[in-house]
Image (cartoon, rainbow, N blue to C red; front, side):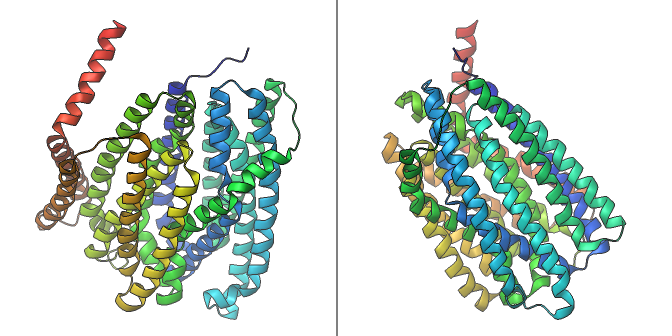
Length: 502
């Protein structure tokens, strides 16, 4: 009999591994960016950011099936249906290889219009075309590596994938720095990423094959499973389109309307958002597989309790993290790169609250996927992406760069409300309106706190560290005070569990 791994152990492993990878991302984002600008000018780097945006948006061709694959394998594994586990895995691999081929072909065709899309001169075209193709190859490999990594996570055995990813990324960073100092220039970045993805794919493919052989169950392509995946593909395709538009289209919109240098300024100012988002999302992502396991067991009351706890604590963490970003990021970017590239405090405010809203939509959609509500959540994410692009293009053309984060804030807030209401009705959760008003007070407090504290901030790293710590402490106290009863109940539950074990 195959022993079921511990959900708790899998979550801890994925969280620790996720934060190791996040630590690498922080190193890569914070330490390497100043090095990039020693060898790469702002405009050229802006084109690189835009190219990565274009390549990332090609990811819509994967139809979003990875969420369904994870849910189906996790749920089958929780029910000890190992034949279904293998069947879902084998048939998903077939689709992943088709998706990788489609992505590469579309990217190849799109390359013929690269000069027009980016408004490039002949002198820039040769370099950026090379960069584009390396990035395209990397994206193709990423599709394949995500398929094998997802299998191990669904089986609650993520440890090897964590270690291999960390090792591969470290090698990629070292290679990038070496190439930069060898005066390879912009090509250093995509080459480092390409080597990283080769290492991740090869190591995880070997480990995945070993896990597959341990199950000792044979399978083959089955029309019913392929059709099951394809049956949901229009909704998953809509999900991918919406996700890519709302998350990856920012650089393309800005470069097209305002120019590549403004894209660099936006990217640098938003870098801390990306890092904080990755830190917060690491924990939420690690819960996808275990939450699907929990749903598969069918304990509604337990599902409801865990769901409320995940949503509440994640929201509080987002408020503390992005609230601190809003207060300190202008000073941070001024010290980190230079004051000329940082955008205004009003734009940073929109970026911070927009990131909170978008992160909540991602958290809520993941829970709905775990609850098998694929169609509704996918359709809502598609609407989010389409509305964001429409609003962003229109508002950016009129008001400038602030139109991008403002559009994300408005659209994602509306979508988060609809997703939250769907979870409430699905699980039969009861809520009080006054609790919602309490959380809105936190938003008002952050704005008031910012208007007061920015008068005392000086231009030094000491002040940045000091006010970051002060902001974290103040926001934590405010959130704890406003939600005192909720936290008291959590502490009471922890004590009861401790007494029970004793």
